Image (cartoon, rainbow, N blue to C red; front, top):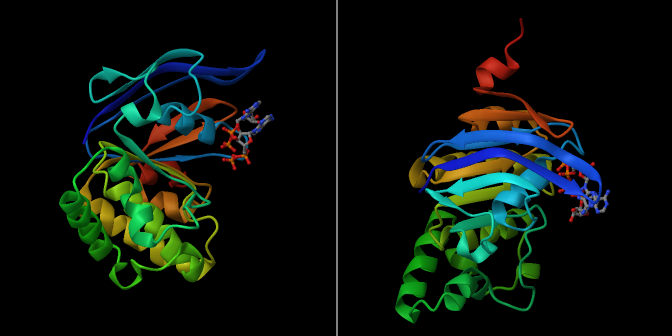
Length: 225
Ligand code: ADP
Ligand code: ADP
């Protein structure tokens, strides 16, 4: 687990600045949900924390270390995407194990970690299947399992449920909530779904036009005056 400290970060594409100086301090184990209209910069902000976009100005500190110049794999983060990004030709087990193999973990350690994550996510019966043989919800669980096995300091979620139908979305939202309670990993979660935001967030970041307009608890943000 780790704290995150984002200090006055900016992002420009060419001459156009799209993130105009965002600052945010995230406590160890805190679940932050980033909301706001399409194009406001949610994804860009998350991708800068992940190391998938260069930071134009400012600093991002994860666990006491400035990560601006670190590769994604050096940041001790794991990211869950909306399109799952699973390897179609690999089994569920191999999809979940892949990052650990790359990191040089032993076979025993990999087996133990994948089994533990599979148990938490009810994926044990499917470990030998291919992604195409799974439902959307099961695929999204595999994507979460792949993040979970790496035991990262920080989870980053980019609209992880937006490709699921309404019923599955509710179920997976509850599962993420449970996971959050049991694992307690510091998380940044992007969504445009207000119910997801209300349910999951310790605090919300409301983005608008490339700035963080409001940072507060869901109660304070959604309370009607
Ligand atoms: P959100 O995730 O809130 O929908 P984004 O972070 O994807 O917003 O985009 C923020 C702004 O940056 C938008 O105006 C978008 O068009 C622009 N943008 C995102 N990626 C690029 C890019 N690679 N090149 C140019 N502009 C981009
Ligand atoms: P999201 O749904 O996460 O907001 P988008 O569909 O807006 O993502 O963007 C998908 C990809 O296209 C991203 O890699 C983003 O950086 C890029 N992109 C978004 N807007 C622009 C833009 N105006 N010019 C160039 N690339 C863009």
